[in-house]
Length: 435
Image (tube, rainbow, N blue to C red; front, side):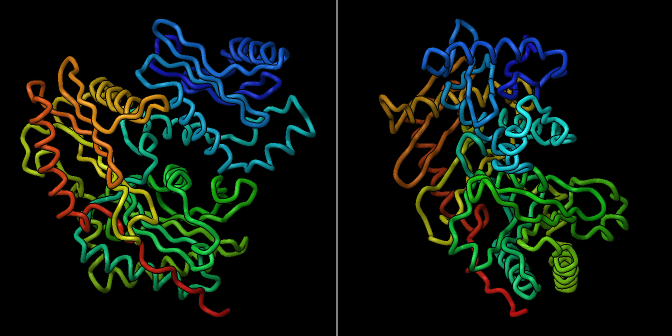
């Protein structure tokens, strides 16, 4: 693990290993024990250790209840950004066990091995951290949407809303996702009035279930930590259009799978959720929308960095901060697919290291910036933050600051024009049908 760019440890207060991003946690038990001893020694003096910065590494410590999370990084991420990632790891663990469940386990037995309850969850945590290395979701705190033609998205959203409202008991939340990206969503009025769905909760849910569940149906308890860290929903997940995929010779492939996720408050709500899926699937198939949706996903519904018509632009991250109310109810962002010269994993990590550096500079608590032009070794970058948007652009190396501002101004006009293709407008909350 010492040769990795970034490593994450999770251990209990007793020094018991729980999770290791790389390697085997049993083999690293001694290292984790030293970390816990260091934290305990500092705490005995009435202090708390937050971070250790050396010439080439940053160690960040985050104590969350009976769990200690540690990040060891050689990236350009700030301590605050690493701490935010550790918070996401902790919340992903809470999504499986709840805060109260973890507290009760360690109250009964301080040295309990939590891996018994997290068996199989390593892949979920690995996927969360892998996405953080080359994706803007954790960095921007927003959901990434699948670009779709506005008429198709409106049609699918309406069908999802009607199917959910007609189900008894009605799900609290209904989502369609493909490849971890959000297609559309619908909420029951009771959930909408109870509080706003946080983008981080949605990201944890999509990381757990939205990247494809294979054949069959999944029914599992899941916690949304920002909504209620001590309570469970019951999540139903299944792929839509399995018959079409089988006939097309893609059975077992998740590249074109559209996943339906329903959250219910009823423990025995599986059959109602399965009925909702059948109803929705039949409606989409009869109207021809299921085929259109599957074709869009399989054909790569994303877009390249040259689509806005600016050849100097290599990549960008854009998060709107102002817009229609139905769009602002869920923080969203968009970015093009990574193309040459960012096709290798090493180059992608290097690009997102630069994005993390720009983000930490413009959001510095000591000296926040609204505009930052940065000349890197192989490219130039510009960060631009206003009350209406947050935008990070990457350009070819000879682009000047004035040229970069001109390109981003052109990009903003394109983004405004394609708003309905790129982003989701939340439909009004639906009322549950009478039982």
